[in-house]
Image (tube, rainbow, N blue to C red; front, top):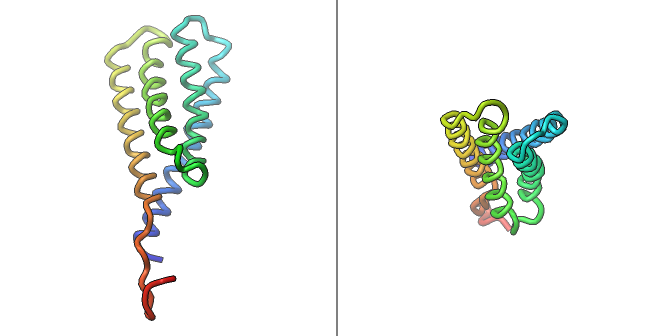
Amino acid sequence: MTARRVLSSLLLAGATLSLLALAGWSLAGVVQQLPRVRTAGQWIETLAQTALGVLSVGVVLTVWLARAWSGAIRRAWAASFALVAGLSALVWGPPMLLPALAFTAGALAVAWLLGWALRVATRAAPPRETLVGPAA
């Protein structure tokens, strides 16, 4: 096994575990906050958080299935991640604009990092050479 394959496997495992953990935390959070939703902003944030959980699983699934959808699913996931991060600081408790902007920027950075890891991990490996010639 080459170093590139090891790196790809580690990146894919890390991104997959991160996305599945995010899906679990997001959907568990929805269940906890549903009884406390009072405002339109809280409803929007709760719906976006539900979308984040579902799309997190969707990103993982499109690594192996329906790869043609992976770009659209990843972009929708990143948008929902940033929306949830920013809105949570505005609609739950006193509105805090600077933390909301910081949370949004952090979520976009994490989304970019996970997207990069998935792109590197799923990039087609170059053809292998064997002792007798190119691999079949």
